Length: 354
Image (tube, rainbow, N blue to C red; front, top):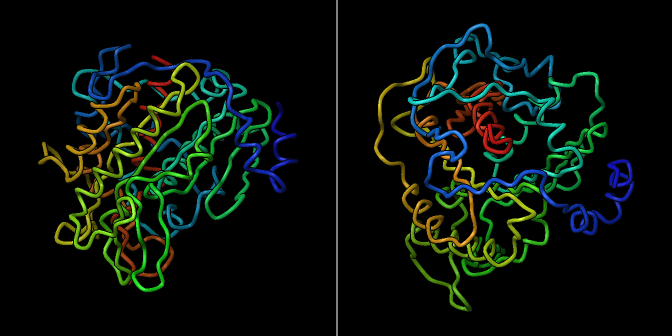
């Protein structure tokens, strides 16, 4: 099925199209959530940031990838220091293979890669779109924001699409006029949009957001007052894991869990930071929950563990360089080019088995 045909159908029946694009994976990775990459015995989660000039940055967001949203293009938004662009993640006992976008596109010709999650998934999705685009700059691409919850970047010459499904909690949510947002911790109905040859899931940050709107949690028909958010996160992630075990055929679809990316708001604010930190860090909240849930799954899910590398990259956030003025300090998302490129380098190594 060509992407010209898909693009013709999308405005009218995009849900139907999402159902029929699932095809057998060209390469399926069987990796336990906590093991090193079995293909090269490399633990990508532990390492340090080193300067790699002139290889990095991998692209210039403004000139190479004009489709990157304003909030991630920190240089365009006035960031003066440039050293943050030069860092490469160096695992202690190996090296991450250099990203080869042409090889990636040829290997996944005719395939669909889908990111499902919050705006940190969006960060990684936009990074991958750019890294692939600059690998084949003469090839046509199509970017469609199908709905506010569904975006697709495609390469017609290779019949490859990478999609982002905005789904910050993965479990069902609804609005109650009196209470506000309610999360149904034991219910998933949006899984009809979770289709692709590779599925990359992410959820964490929205579970712990604070704001004017209070979040309530529901189990069955009971709304639970004052439930601990970490316990709710564990229940919700377990619901997701059960859905994967029951609905995904591992012979056709590779599943990856995009790990928890550290934020640096509050006392450890990212404003004015221009270099990564060094050393080890205490376990980040939620990581043990992820470990526990993934370890109890029947399915092979690769845990793309990015927590330590993001804990150390306090300099990698947009901070006041989002284009929204200096009163807005973003210490959750990531500049592009930047840290999410490393996540995609690891993704490349895992999917291609190199």
